[in-house]
Image (cartoon, rainbow, N blue to C red; front, side, top):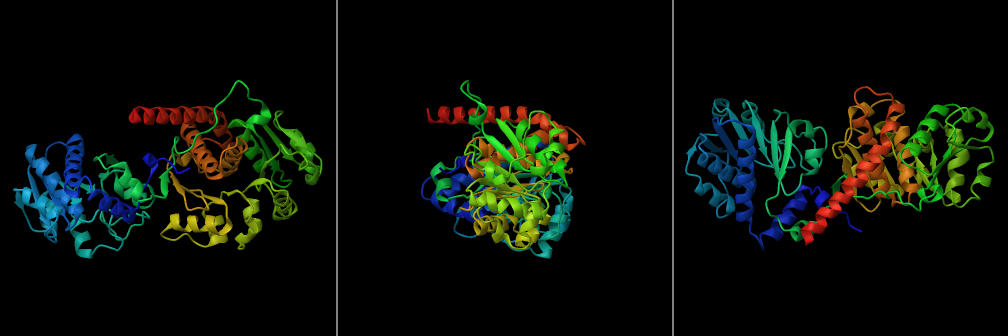
Length: 485
């Protein structure tokens, strides 16, 4: 089943397909009029009337700027327009330019410096090469900047900063945000991001076939509690125990329990006594791994947190031969080294940037493409953890998760995340959806934990995070029903 278009993050190339389709129905001129009006409304809602200079490019983004200038002038604001290249004739941008009857000034840094507020409608999200130093010099003279769609130096697909330039206080985009609004480092330049519904038909967005999504409840749905639940129905999470670093295994087990697993068991072997000193709700197994795998109810296994490479070697191949659903993290990623093929057969991996780079090479300026290719390469869902986590499925679907807190940057947080994702897998969720849900729940727990929490503090918030995710997903479903009605 395809994800809900309400959560899509179309790339600039996909937006071009969407616009071409829309030109056959609602018309680009109509959409441009609505987009410019939305920019003017966003500016009026956030700033007092002041001297505004709108910098326009030759394409549709420039056309949006001319419309915004007209609406601001109509509202009584002192507005000037400047272009570095006139709009293409004929075309909707040229028509929008002709309808603005106000002052036009030269495209210079001096004129920009005189304005109180500058609106950048030069390139929008469509530029994939660095703007000229002349253009960036003009923009850098601004006191305050608002972007129409995206700041001119930000790559709309990757969030890369293509040229050194100023920060913006507001970016107004249309239909849906672009990946460049979500991904760092570009995200830090955009300022506040608002997106406006300009009446783009849904079939035009569907025609663009977006494959990148904003990670939110409604993109996936976590099973809610049922009166008929029992521990095996809620799911069993099994963990391979580390003897040298047992704390990591315990943290992952605690994350699984706190996020709703029906039963959590640790395969501890000869180190069982040490684990029995921990939480009383854990089941500690001494039997050999092969014997434990005779229980078909133990479908989901977590292998890696707290494990040495030797311990991974003794367990991960056994789990894969048994056909289990395996989440590989930490020690398992180190065991794979520079040979990601050793991980083929696992369901999910959750590397941080260092582990990812060792396995697949540096993600460079296009981390979404790099994670997407890594998932395809090993046939598993890949979660690249970071300020914005990237969750890629082997079929090319990618979710970007910005629902998190810097408070998660503490040792052991990744072990907790592994346990949460394992719980979602044990609950019967599909692999990519389970990873997306686990990352969001982990982020919500971090937001609830406040400033400077220790990792154990996350556990007490995971239950409420799960309840919130279920409620939000139900709300989105109800909204969709109302819209259809």
